[in-house]
Amino acid sequence: MSGFVPRLLRVKKFFTERLAKSLPEPEASLLAGLLVGEKQALGKEWNDRFRTVGLSHVVVLSGFNLSIVAENILRLSGLILPAKLALTSGAIGIIIFALMVGGGATVLRASLMAVIALLARATGRLYQATVALGVAGVPMLLWNPLVLVYDLGFQLSFLATLGVIHGPVLLAPYVSKLTDRWGVKDILLTTLSAQIIVLPWILYTTGNLSLIALPANLLVLPVIPFTMLFGFLSAFLSPLSFIPHLLLAFVLLVVKIFSALPLAAVIIKQFPL
Image 1 (cartoon, rainbow, N blue to C red):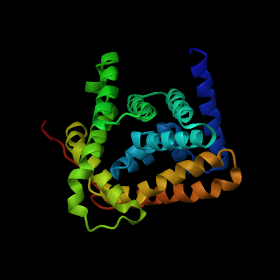
Image 2: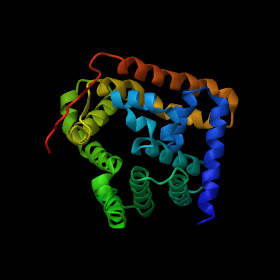
Image 3: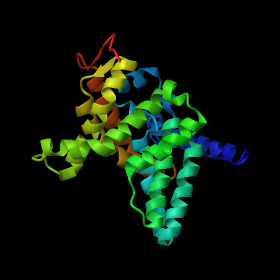
Image 4: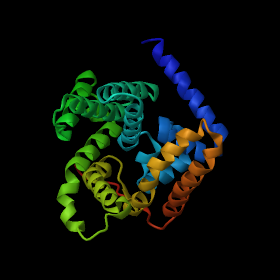
């Protein structure tokens, strides 16, 4: 294992270098954040803009991004392998990917939940997301209890996942008249569920209240899966690079415009527990 991880890190470095050659900045750095969690690549100014509009979870390799990666690994495995072998190789692929990108608390939690889902599918058992969240969280806390207190990313990821599991069912009656076309309703329900449950903790820990997080997420999230897919392909097939270039430019334009709006975000200096 000691020699395996450095090899994976070299693969990650090679991949980010390929992205840098196929795309201009800051698009290349944003894609590196989306695909392999290179958070610092964008720089402070852009990271602040993403934070202002409530899209920080896009810049880093969050549970949302990793779920897209996991689904694509599983689909690719399913094309070339029998069902059970595809599930096994999918689980191994997710673990390898988590090791390559650094295996932070958020990535580790999402990876464990994805592997549990695949295990349930392989054994014909019902996947209960809340149970999986607990099963993924408990070993992490036993290994390092300090993440519960000091790791804001883990805290927000855990809360957001809990919101996404239970929130859409509770909120669905309030948006019943909204169209299902282009996945608008699902994105709205998922975004609202995550935002509602994490907002009190964000205000308590950072005091940052984004007033435009919902519209920004509704505009950006639908294009992220396509951006990641074509962005990955463009690292090896440079003629395709114009597709992720356009998608990334759109994301950056939305963030730039929204973050410049008056009162895009306000700071609440004191929000009691």
